[in-house]
Length: 331
Ligand SMILES: *Cc1c(COP(=O)(O)O)cnc(C)c1O
Ligand code: SF4
Image (cartoon, rainbow, N blue to C red; front, side, top):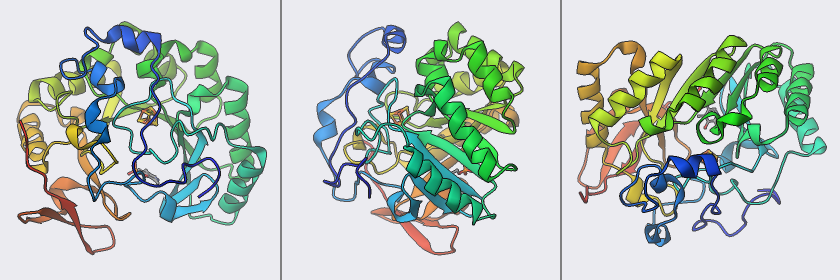
C-alpha cells in the first residue's frame, strides 16, 4: 500500500463527480429509474457492505510489484497513472485507489515501474489505468508513454479509459494523433448502456480509428442498468457498427457497497445464451468474472464447475477452485 491509497480498508466509496456532458445524458436524476443516473448518483445501498465485499475485490494489492504497478498476468502489467476520473462510477471496483487523492504518478514511481519492466521481459503489454489516464494532459500522458517505451521499445500500450463515453470532447485530433504516433497501442473504453453511444462518442472513436488505434469495450453487467437482453443487444450491435469490439462483459466484482448492482451468474449466463442466438460472434463479448481472493479473470462459461447453495464454484487459471458467493436475485 502507498500513500495514494485509503488505508482504512473496506467500506469506502468513490467521491461524487460527474461531467456535465454525462449528466446531460440522464433523463432523470433518480438512480432507481435511469440507467445513466444509476452510474453516477450515489444510493443509500452503497452503505450496505457485505462481509465478503472489499475495497480491493480483485486483489490488486497482492500483485503490486512497485508503487502503482500491478503484475498479475504473465505478459501484462497494469500501471495506475492517475487517480482522477471524469465520472466516479458508483460500481467502480478499484475503490482502494480511484479518486483517493493520489493524483498522477510521480517521476520516482514511473522510474521504479520502468526498472521493473526492464528486468521483466515476460511483460509485453502495459495497461495504463487508474483512475483515468486520459484525465492527464497530452504532454503528461505522452511523457509517460515515451518513458515506458524507452524502457521497453517493444511493448504494447493499452489505454483503459472511460473518457470517450463520459467526456468525448477529450478525444481531440491532437490526442488521437499523439497516440497514433505511439503505436502499437489500443484503447479500451467502458460503455454500459446504448444511450451512452452518442454522436459525440462516435466522433471520439472515429478519431482514434483514423489514427490507427483499435478500440475495444468492456462493460459491467449492472442490475437495473443493462441486465436485459434487448439493452445488451443494442449496446453490442451499436458498438460493433461504430468500430468498437465488445471485449468483456464483467460479472460485478465484490466491491464494497455494490451488491445492489450485481445480478446472479445464472442471469448472466442466460443473457449470454440469448445473445448468442441473436447476434454476430463479432459483437459478443466474453462474459468474465474476476475471482475473489485475487484468483484472476476467467470466462464464466468455461470456468464454472458447479453451483452450490451459497456459491458458484469456478476453476481459476491456477487450476484451483474458487468460490464466488451466490446471492439471491431480489427482482
Ligand atoms: C484485467 C487485468 C489485466 C488485463 O487482462 P486481459 O484479460 O488481458 O484484459 C491485466 N492486469 C490486471 C491487474 C488486470 O486486472
Ligand atoms: S471511470 Fe473507471 S476507474 Fe473511474 S470510477 Fe469509473 S470504473 Fe472506476
